[in-house]
Image 1 (cartoon, one colour):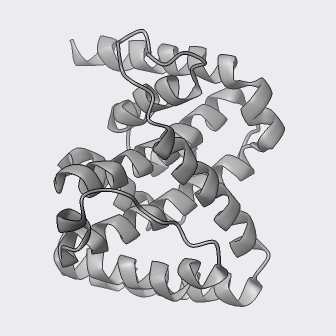
Image 2 (image 1 turned 60 degrees about the horizontal axis):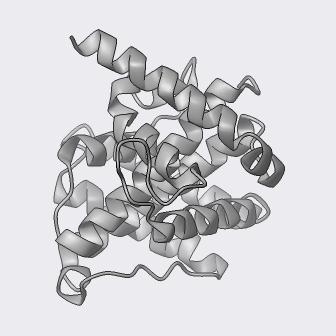
Length: 217
């Protein structure tokens, strides 16, 4: 994968889209189906020519680009009037940390890959958003990422967090977030890139959003 601002922006937008989904479920008990489908599919794509191919099209990451712009802004409000949600950035940073720990643990990383391979066969019988698939993705997260330490404490409404289906979706989205974090690293992302390229990535997100708008009209 090329180390470009474009690729880093897509990867970080995907990460923010995953944690936005987590927040939606934790606070409302609901989630946008397109957002969920896009994030979950990314965990099962093993080979792709470009990072964009992993997520289908740029339009599938529209929520992620908008969230990225808001979270990387130095202002409390985005140009669209969106209030910055610091919890999203907290989740994203934790996932970036967990991805590094996963990469340093060969046994756990291989166990995760084996789980993903098994999932490929199940997709012959179920849709990606079927409860069977989501439950298995959640199990893979619990059996691998959760055991690395520094567990992510998701905040929200306990009625929604205590719902079994919502809890499984949240863990599946966190797994997808680790996948996006890996892509961020592969595209040359890191702490310093996040610090010094935030303006570049915000501008690149604007370019992508303009392209999405142009293709949808």
